[in-house]
Amino acid sequence: MSGHDCDITLTVNGERVTERVDARQTLVDFLRDDLILTGSHVGCEHGVCGACTVRVDGVLVRGCLMLAAQCDGAHVETIEGVSDLGEIADLQAAFEKRNALQCGFCTPGMLLTAQELLARGGVPSRETIREQISGNYCRCTGYQAIVDAIESVAQTRAGAKR
Image (cartoon, rainbow, N blue to C red; front, top):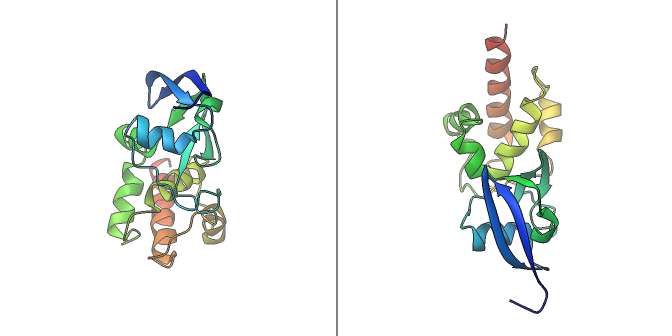
């Protein structure tokens, strides 16, 4: 630690956490290194690739662009917490069934981004799905299977609400 440490208290995946952090430490590094929540990945470190996506107070953010110190008092949800709650179980199953994940590096951010869209309800167009995930880079799948998986979950969820 440097001479620029600060104490923060936040709620991560429903658990209250108090830690001393370097004022310059990013949220994604704090989650990965201090809390050993390694589902969020460090990719470009410029907020472009989406690998570090997490929810802070219900809003998707890039964990590489936000400082841990900025999250004092916040509620942070990582892919681990969202997954443990079963919120995205159907999306996870669809990604597996449709071969929408290969190396898996982009998958946590992709799932959180897809869930944000699907939480609005209805069945978004394929163009809307593509627009929603456009900030999440995938180097393996070519995106088609990802769009297929998200669309299938939207259709299933909409059908279940009828």
